[in-house]
Image (cartoon, rainbow, N blue to C red):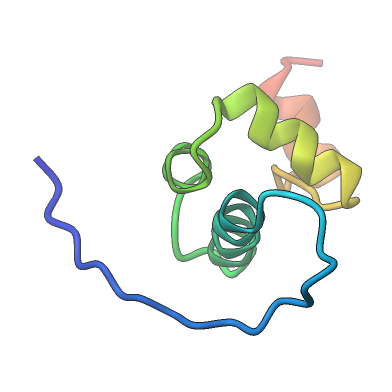
Length: 80
């Protein structure tokens, strides 16, 4: 079992904000850690609290590449 450390962060949010701030902050944090290469795709989806496929969709909506393959690497992986 993975040991976790919980940290509370206070963020001022406008009173007229509409949405689930906890969910959005978890997603933003997961995306940031993933982009910096600190965590895997699977771990990022766990932190965000969504399935891997949904996390991939969120990355795509933000024009963030989930995989960094060159054309040659991709051809090799696909045996083309």
